Length: 135
Image 1: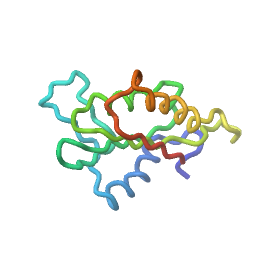
Image 2: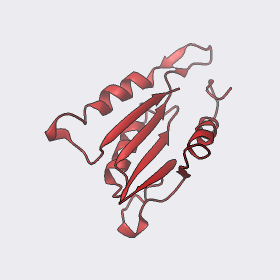
Image 3: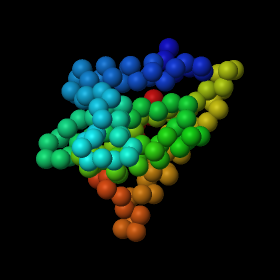
C-alpha cells in the first residue's frame, strides 16, 4: 500500500507517474525555463507542454500538503512559471495516524483555500485553471 502512515511520498509519486508519464506523456522533474533566470528554478513533479508558451504543472503532495503549505508553494510555482498556466494538484483525502485514524483531511482544505484565488479580480493570479485530485 502506498498511502499508509509512514510511507514515503515517492511511493505516491511513482503511482501517479505511471499515469501521467505513460498514458498522458507528461515529463517528470523538468526545470521550467531556466533562461528566464527565476530565482526559484521551478522544478515541478510533472510538466506537460501545451505549446505556445503554455503548459500544465502537476504536483503530488503527501504529509506536508497543508501543514507546510506545499499546496500554496505549488500554486506560487505555477503562477511564476512563464510557460505554465494550469496546475494539477494531487493531494491526500486524509493523512493517517499510526493507529489508522485520520490525522488531517488536506483535500477539502486545499480546495477551499486555493479556490479563493479565483473568481475575484483583486486576487487573480496567472494560473488559468486549478484541478485538485484526491487520493
